Image 1: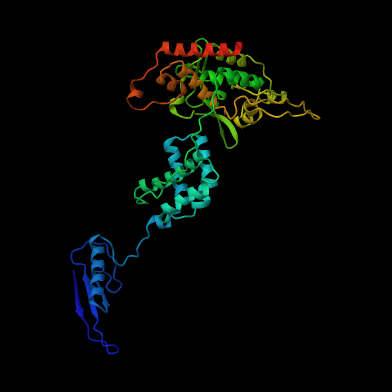
Image 2 (image 1 turned 30 degrees about the vertical axis):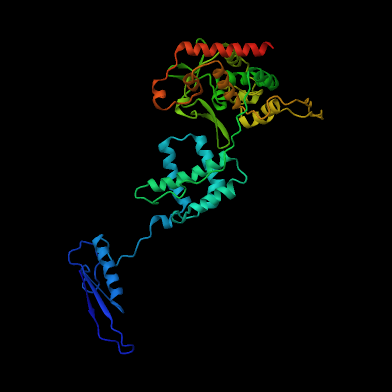
Length: 425
């Protein structure tokens, strides 16, 4: 309830002043205590030069009382105006990783992108001042100029997820996501380099000690981390991970991969839940695995003395150490696919002959694509191929698609025949 009264004219300028009074007659706002009376304040009074200003002030006081707000309270700044992106990530990220059960390797890679790309630009920025145009400029000018389109999209998704979590938080921190509809660089549409069984045979022949690993990657369609993480001492609910009797390799749901974390290698979960699978393998794959299992312990004597038990991993290096993809790629895989110039013999080295390019640009992951291409050429159903690769199918096809034993037998027969034809040449 508000009323207004005109005060006498001021002597110095002759202006009429207006006194506005607002009384808390029926509102239930938690008002502060008046220091003069010692009771809750029920009346607000202020003098203005014009009645318009007085009416605007009175309407503001009544609006606060209607909403249950003390008119004398100091306005609280919205959290988005004080909370920086770095502070919000430190508060939200650990809970998100724990709730979604993110793999350690995935957490490490996301942390690295945050540390190198997102934090230097946006870490000290408060959430309220994020601007969509500035984010678009950052993507176009600072990221797209040097990083691959796929990597730029990963960095952008990290920032998008952080802002989206602030929108979804309750109470809400951001009213909308400033990363909405940011245009990404044009993707690189180049086809993944793959090859046929004859090409795999040529690459495997150049890999020497690791020729059997190359053939097993091609014959199973497994990812690198899944194959080199294969262990002799693990069992799943359906049987051992290495089932020699049934020619089946099983991927353990929690320790099935050799993942790199904090610079070290350790067993960890596969990429997705659907990746924990059983794969029927051709006879040549099981022969290679069995030969590795029966291989003597080649670790140095000091290592055997400190750790008498043999390594649980099937795939080891010439000195008995676990395999690291970066080292394998640099020392073995790239020269085998791309070729190399002759390295002359020097003191302490034997030198290396020149190699012509065989399958230029193919990555280790290209063996997985090559595996899929062979099965598609043989007319194997897509549902069987995706189940073998550890991909989950969505929709009705994912519910009603199943792989029969005869389909698996046909896949094994196709792979075995392609291997035999390639190795006979």
